[in-house]
Length: 33
Image (cartoon, rainbow, N blue to C red; front, side, top):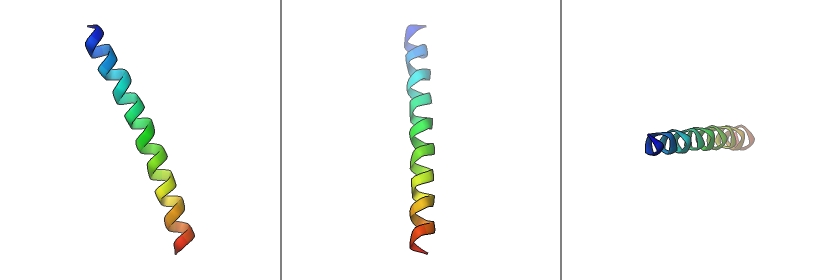
């Protein structure tokens, strides 16, 4: 159970990272175009 909980936490972190990466990529694209 602890392992799954840890995995879920890790997944949440990754999702957050993805969102940040996406927004920075969008920002970069809008600035270059």
